[in-house]
Length: 249
Image (cartoon, rainbow, N blue to C red):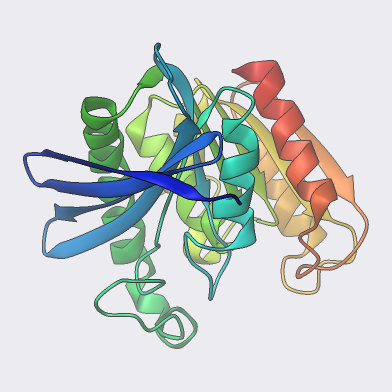
């Protein structure tokens, strides 16, 4: 990734941030307190940015973190095209104080609480990043992979500011919540251009579940099916998300 040539520090109220310049990219690591949780995150953007940039929030799959290839490495790549790219450690993941990803497999009754918790964290993180970094919240995008999409659907829907989103390897139900009904977040996505990326041999998310989610989307939308199973999140998935964001942001 190159050599760290300087150290940068910044702070706004309730928001702690420090980072480095690495080659052509500024990488900042931050933490903010939302409720009783300290939420760790990172953001990457081009060195010397003198205007506010589109911001893409990128969310890792289950058992991962903001330091996954799908977040940090891709954030560095996309920053070089003129975007700011950020990621948060999901509840129970990464550098969270209560790190225990397996809770999500053991306690389905916790799903509504975790959906609400992460939605509130995303909303607060966006506001904090807009205060601290050169980002334009009128050009706001989202990319999620598996768990990142399950949590991302309610977070994007409840925030209401996202212009475009790519939800990859996800279907209705479970942690994502229902696609329809009084408790559904999907109907609130009418202002967001949504790409659904599915895997043709997905062994965890059925094609029917993915298609039910897609059919329930109320606004501009597209679906892309790619070969492989659920755990084959490769360059094809990343490229599909990138092309959608280029087009819609």
